[in-house]
Length: 361
Length: 266
Image (tube, rainbow over the protein chains, first blue to last red):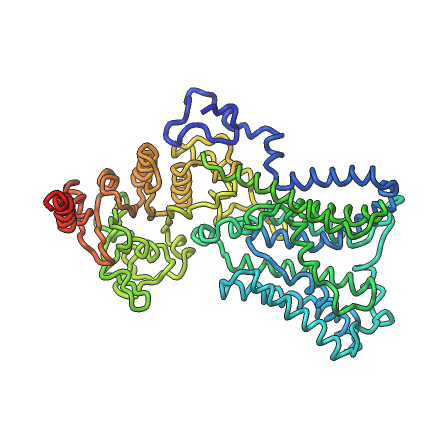
């Protein structure tokens, strides 16, 4: 066994440290930089993002303009706001299929509450926050109480929410969309918070991009530097082991679902204040985009591994591909093809990384 | 000076519905001693562990920690009372770095309010020094713990329990999946933990390993106690014989002998 060539392996068996005469400081040397980079979960996504960027730079002339970049960023942020907490949830070992329609539910609740009660729109926004968090709590609570696979539970929530979205909207507005709330009190302020844009230099930046960046920073902080982050990795990696050392597994999982709900609330409010009416059938299928972004970003489907930054890069790949195809003037039909190919490549890469990480000596 | 044992089980029983998983089992664990629980598969060893570790409550008998009758509600409660359990297969989270595993569930933190955060440097340093103290020399505590060998993982789990002030260490088949040399290494740490003043419960089906380090031996058979001995009271041969099934083994050897002679006779 050559310990020098394999810095990731331990030196010698536990009992007899190989070469006790060796100076101690040599042992504290951490793995070399390239080696450490190679073991980051974001690696695949970053390589993929660079490849996609270079590809569209050549394929579409308009792609390299600042205005295009702004459009790409906006498209990335709408997926990214959800992909980041979905990534955390997946690191925690669970799925959420209800996220796409939950965004729509959140927007509908906000809009309809304000309209029906003729209240300040901020009241609707607040009610929507509580209701959406309650949906997240419901998902998490049901999961830890029943121990059913999260696939089944959130599939049920997905269908229930979809039905409620369509049914209640029809019942209350008698159409498939909500009434406009643009003339109501508080609307301009809420629009500033959830659906405005600012100009930085020559680039117009949608405020969702800021929300997205803030969520990435928050999620990364939680994952890597807080106790909760440690617990998220643990409940996803080995639930029973985590429970045995005193990690509150149920609390962690419920918290993750509520985190997803919180992001769904932000997305939902953006949806509402950007268009001021909400289509009740929207959002179906988006849940898969969030999961795909997280997986491309290095999250394992089995949990315990991944990163928020990776998921954000995954969302960025999504944004570049989505808009790049338009700039290259190909049919948008090819978008799904690209997404599928990326997903396959990313998953294969992640599988290989995990194999290496788990390999026993 | 006689003190109460760290853990004392008296006639403890556990039922799963109609099934008697454990019946009238008694054992005691004292500081600086190793109590070995021996038994074949299905003898009730894991049920016993789960009761001591706080995963299950007991249905009958008494369970006293330092002379005080208790009923543990959760693994966290057991940990808080100083009972640390190291499971054979689920001791660690393989994909997490060694230091994160070491402090999992008892993370060090610094700062206040929303900026309360993990004290990463301190945890890395402590992990290294604590492992070194047990004689495990890791080059990089950031490597996933899954890259360590089975024996090393057991040792990390033991070092973790000792570091966090466990007074009773419960080890579930620590040597079952290991080779001869690795087993020796693990048994050395078990002895080191005992010498540090901990009470140890060693669950095993290997009487040779048990006899090397044990002070007391409790034999389980089909959920009931088949014997309880101190090291002075029993020899390795006798322990092995009882463990292997004693009279059952003689019966088995008769049957095997008949099978061998059977075809030859006809």
